Length: 161
Image (cartoon, rainbow, N blue to C red; front, top):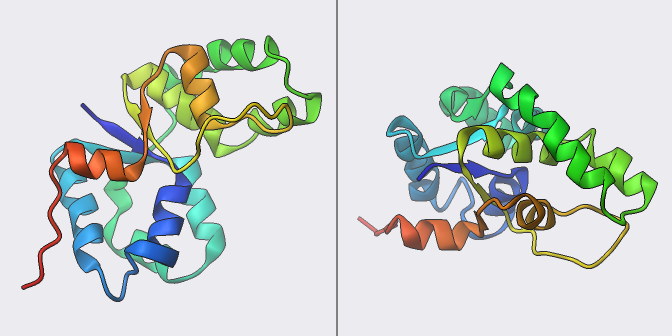
């Protein structure tokens, strides 16, 4: 099983539970599991992180270049399927237009192309104003889970030395 991480996984980890300064084990776990072919994200998420221009951007630039997959032809081939799903729902036009332009759209297409599980803090929503990753996953029959589910499934251990 391979995982694709949403930007909010990185951002919330940095800001809340796994700060770069006090929980380096989380960040090391990401790098190690990327090296073993289990954990990835995508180039569009890297762009979102880079826009923050903070310590997370520095970590990404210094340690995680292999973590972010480029958009390849297999992913591009799935754009139509994802956009057809989005436009066939009852979302507001603004929600659809926004979704088709942000990293979430690319994450879903990557997951379809590569058979990945999407990892996000988002939860399904009945709102017609924003397309959430879990709603797209449910509509396209993709697996998704929270970062905590992924860490438990992979038996991550962050043990003090």
